Image (cartoon, rainbow, N blue to C red):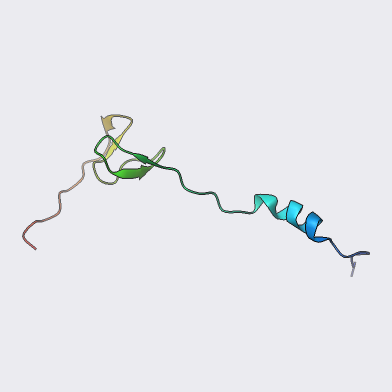
Length: 63
């Protein structure tokens, strides 16, 4: 089995891992005023880019 000839330095290890971080989500405000992820349909109103895409049921108020 092959073994490394020299120890990988902290700098080289960090440079290799520089692209491994998790991207931070970019929330935007929908036209209805709710926070939504960009390029996704709003879960509150069901619209995307100003057009109604899905029908969203209103929650029951009598619970």
